[in-house]
Length: 168
Image (cartoon, rainbow, N blue to C red; front, top):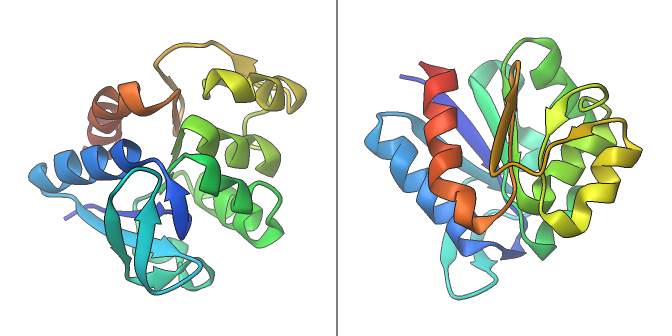
């Protein structure tokens, strides 16, 4: 069974960007683990409550086939987190799938892995990708090698489909 870790802010993450991919991936028999800066209840921007099972600091690259950064305003807590940037690079350098949706793509940009890569992000964050050397495409979903990015909540289902393709 393939395994993916969702990295989620403890509050103000985008409900749809968490719930829709999680449901779709689990139906495709992919094990989803939720990580955050806290263990226990975490809160979406709109109404969702979810359970964080592990701390981001305890994620081991060898335990997962992919990592996914859920967007929303709360994801900004990871934008300049050097330990998270190291985690992104460790997944990327071992050839595992590295993915993010909405503002979560800024985390990938700031970690350095989007330089020279096609990527998308929530339109308001496009400059962060461009400044990091990404080829910003403004598409709903963009895949470049083992990197998958999505531009926001409306792309969540399509994004999940790309993750499934990449993991199979």
